[in-house]
Image (cartoon, rainbow, N blue to C red; front, side, top):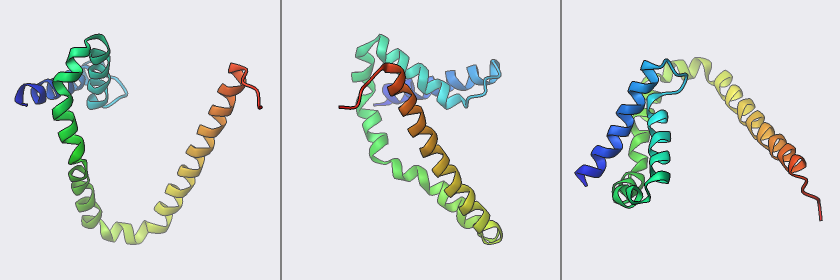
Amino acid sequence: MIPALTLILSFQLIGEIASRGLHLPLPGPVVGLVLLVLSCAIWPRLVERIRPVAQGLLSHLSLFFVPAGVGVIAHLPVLGQHGIGLALALAVSTVLAIAVGALSFAAVVRLMGARDE
């Protein structure tokens, strides 16, 4: 378990170093995750090595939302002042994201030449 966790955290560290060193517009953990996925595609045995730890982390994923909840409670006065604007921005951005996704899907279907049957 410790070697697999060390491997996962090493990829995160490598991603952090690459992101900062190359001034990439992506966060280091995202770069590390992409590198980990690419490594798993190249070396399938790596998947079996990290699977138990990854499943353990995923089973307790809700714990990662605790800091976000604490942050919301800590900034409750700001939320009270700007809550309507934040809710409106959240709703509009969600609708726009869904619309862009649907339009992109429709464009890809047209480009691929799929026909309605």
